[in-house]
Length: 288
Ligand code: SAM
Image 1 (cartoon, rainbow, N blue to C red):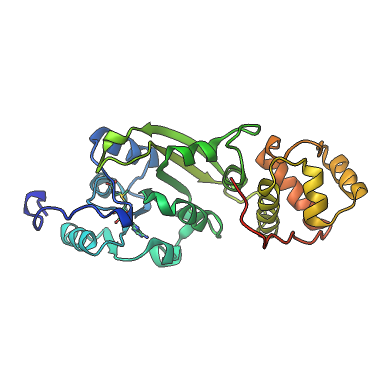
Image 2 (cartoon, helix red, strand yellow):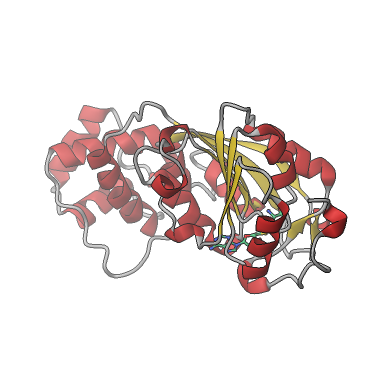
């Protein structure tokens, strides 16, 4: 459909749905370029909104599934792409859509989105804490969240998010995007990140579960030495923790934030193999 004949002016942006539309054409193109979608690819776009990325994607992807929660925007997208059999609009909450409903082959799916920032973590972990994981994920996120995902060990912002993502995927920053690239102008700076899950996975599902328990325990008390956390949270003796550190070549007197994601995986695996009970974390959520 010709953009000029779209029905009426676009509705007012809804804060509740995180609607900050990307108006900078250069940023739009660069995000879509980062996904590298071709005619062989199936792509899911999360929160297509007024179609800023969608129109570029529709020219490239073999099949494009648009998941949009907003009634009016979903209706407009349906009207705009009605004549394109390669584009399907799902008027749904992305958090309620299993990838199996999007595609017959989730392992080949590429995912892209300028997403509502208030649901970044559930979107991200919804894509990563499942099997098979999608092939590639390109997301616009709050810059501060990108910084946390990409932080190096030892950095103040390194924590559960960095370990959770980078234990199962490679992650990189594509670019930073200033506030003026959006309308309405948001309060925060943004970054585009590209996440490529390891294929085949390097961590078993059992070890991933163990890793989640470990990172919650570790970063819930990040000022403590790792050995103290393991003793308190897993009920291990000083001797058991000493033996664990020696076996893995890890100095567990250091704080959790000094260990790379791979070391967390090694530790989580060793704890599971020793059948150390997962910690009771009912007292509250982990920080970072
Ligand atoms: N992609 C567009 C762009 O770049 O201009 C819009 C981005 S805007 C930041 C986020 C979009 O996600 C909005 O269109 C909003 O309606 C949609 N949205 C919000 N919550 C959603 C949800 N739970 N599931 C699917 N879409 C959602």
